[in-house]
Length: 241
Image 1 (cartoon, rainbow, N blue to C red):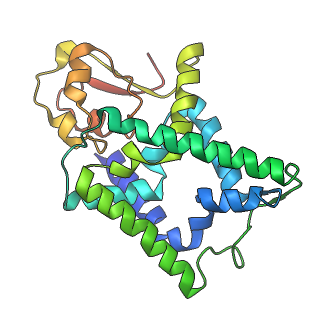
Image 2 (image 1 turned 135 degrees about the vertical axis):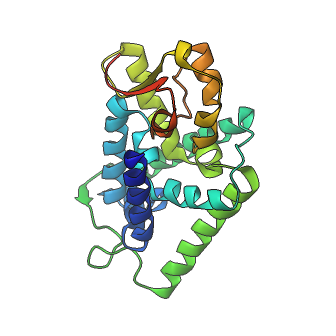
């Protein structure tokens, strides 16, 4: 479980640093930049995370996303799995709307003319004014309410457009079948204890995935929680088949 301790510590550190780094993960700042023909730090980060998804899938969500780390903290209050199903489709609509806005603002600005990684920040720090903290509390208040009402990582399941970007990257990898980080299993070792499903921060039915011998799931964030907690080592995590 040492790997999970490292993962949770990393998510906690990234969450606590969000007042300094918020603008680098903000789709709003990205749009503000594109409206002026500027590639911001957030745009660079979204491009890098997409490229990483071609090999690592949604690894960003499980290991580096501060919003995801915040939602895992919320599991102390609400740890039920989300309903999922068709509600998971909402984030695809959000993503399409977001992409249309990006394209529209880039075209209206006549294209991207410059790069400013620190766009919108003061000396590289995101939140320096009181009004900025109001926005910060509104954002995380909304994420908190959604996590409490809907269940584990509700924001990831239903709203986050970045998730869709990473899912597209994973779909491309699955289409071309190049080596990538993934889960695999030996269903003959599974005893049906269901510990893996309870440990999954996305609330997935991992036991059923193992029983079906199908570990690929668009909502899987490759955090390795299921692999690390399995008492029979029925779930493997890595690049090897």
